[in-house]
Image (cartoon, rainbow, N blue to C red; front, side, top):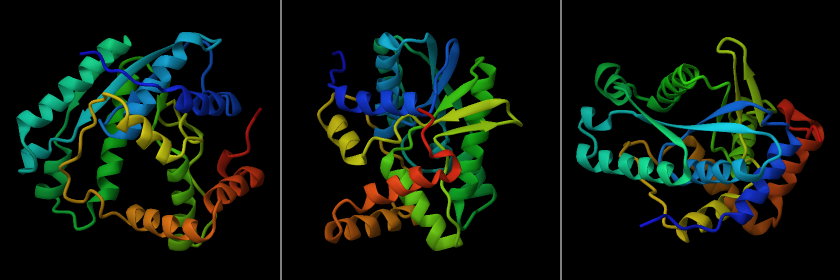
Length: 254
């Protein structure tokens, strides 16, 4: 059965972000990191639909990294493979090429290295594998699924944990890899992504990682949610301050 979804609201946010920060240019080949979570699926659907009418021509390659949790005794191998088959089918319906990359990241982290704080190393290894795969497919850009709430949370985490003012950038050029990272969902509130996914027939998968929902980010997510209840619009004011100050490339180009 075809996946059905109404993506107009998210697509409007994504189009504005792509325009404001000059994320996509004529002839770009954009790799989309698709984990199977709600954010990456919303990103994939957004760009696949944007491609149909955007004034410049660009191509999309969907890339899914298999961390190999089942190799470390986490999750069921067949269930995980079934999830990837569903992503592959979605890509077929969206007319997007799909590449699945098998890795042993989970085994290295949890069995070989026995990391007590595995999230940082896992993120670095995932990034490396994603960047290398994107380059091998001829992509010059990688689209990541960070959204509005991720940006605000990252800003607050840097402020509280490191005593510095900063955040990831909407557009980042990696000179060592000669590839550019773009984040088309930075204007999209997480609640809109959640609503979109909950009202769509999309193959959302859930990570078997034992660290899921236990990260430092999750603590800040809960803290900001609590503060927002007593200070309506707080997250939007923080986001606006980041843009006005031009922190880490957040001042819109257009």
